[in-house]
Length: 274
Image (cartoon, rainbow, N blue to C red; front, side, top):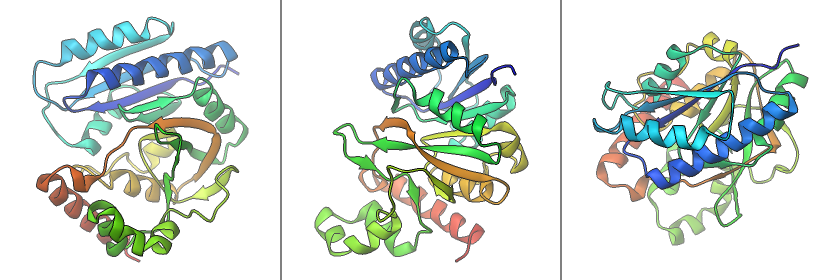
């Protein structure tokens, strides 16, 4: 059988070009490795530029330089639509290109060389699985817990806005939300809620749920997507798929981000009560 084709979507908004270049370089290395292993076919990267006008050429030059090392990996930059939000921007990428598989990738993620190959092998061996979420670490090597339990308003407020000393008073609840009691060195399947910083999906599964809900501008669009995906397929946590994620907390980004966080959380709880 021919190796599956892949699209990769990266949504940017006035990105830090240094970190984006690193993300693209790691993507190129991982794609090249997977093609050498015979697990990956033609690959198309779509960078969706949600930021100010005038960045498209810079983004294209950055991508061209980074992807030189990955023959068979082509790219395009979708721009000119303005800041339509993370969910709509990801749907723009889905509308541009159709492939067997689709990778949702944040512009602050560095994947290990064999991460893509490991995810592709897992999907090939498990036809009942429609999406793979990885083992993620902070830059200092401490684990991130991308898979979550169903949140509550209290847990979300503590995580997003409370100072560290207050969060320490509720450690048990916060640990339960991140399901820290599970063995994250082992595969976990199925899972329901996972971060969208790296999500390797079958295109058929994404089409079955009609992609992202465009009603989310920022935050919780990935939780909503994975909840809906879990109703039509299985999502697997695969520890062999390893990434480093440079991420930030909503509460440290100002009042506008706090307002967006609350609005999106409200939409999520309306869509997924209980």
